[in-house]
Image 1 (tube, helix red, strand yellow):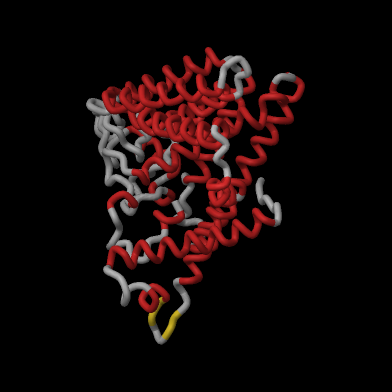
Image 2 (image 1 turned 180 degrees about the vertical axis):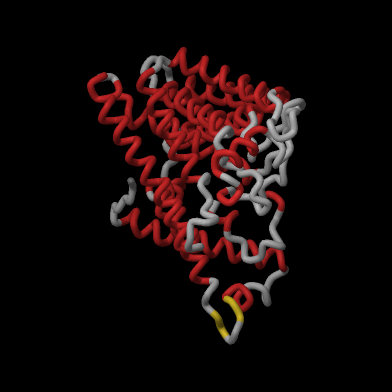
Length: 344
């Protein structure tokens, strides 16, 4: 996402590094659900032992709430530093959705069985499909899947008002309230997979085989459902949940086989440096470009000086983004070598 969010020139971006305009799914559209998926997996690994003792639950829940609130505050403060004032402060957002999904999935994991969670996945996905496709939107009197006309956009305008939404028209938000419900399913799928990986009664090769099988089935099911309920990240449609979740399961299955089963670990170290300090990396990806763009050399920006004269427009744009990724990675690598982990 650091690469995607910081091109040198927003007018020249390679297609795989852009979000879909509306329906459809690019590689970029998979990153956010992958993160929510791995949040679900991590809940199992972080909480399984403590969750077995019911008396630990209040402490775990309060800890999850504290982390969630801090994430939301960090997001809002970051906005205010760049755009002072509350008049147009965006209330929904990426960190906000991660915080809410993490908190709700934590409670569901602690207080329900896996069978109940499986039923929740089915109920939420089908229920979301019914709501978006058949419940009339109060503004128009009919259901819609268009950006500003769907019932999720109406709910966000009603709750947050148009001054506090993301889109340029201030009529809808890709991280809105209603779309958080299927996003929770993405986290629950991660919990399902994390619980499977933690099982002691299954051989590693069996685990990998089933992960790849279920992942492919989810992808195919998502594609089929997408024929009449389009795959759409902004709406976080049920078909998108299954399609993106399937790729997440396949990706994790391959990584698990390479790293844990086959023992090929050294190649992953650069990615681990990002992973253990994901939050500071994400925050720095907002701050560093903001201040670098203020630097001028003879009246020209860094991009105009170092990249634009030497590459084609598209390559100059992606080269600038790649250098930023490497710069932030270097900072994370230093923290990693010093065993410094910044978390909430």
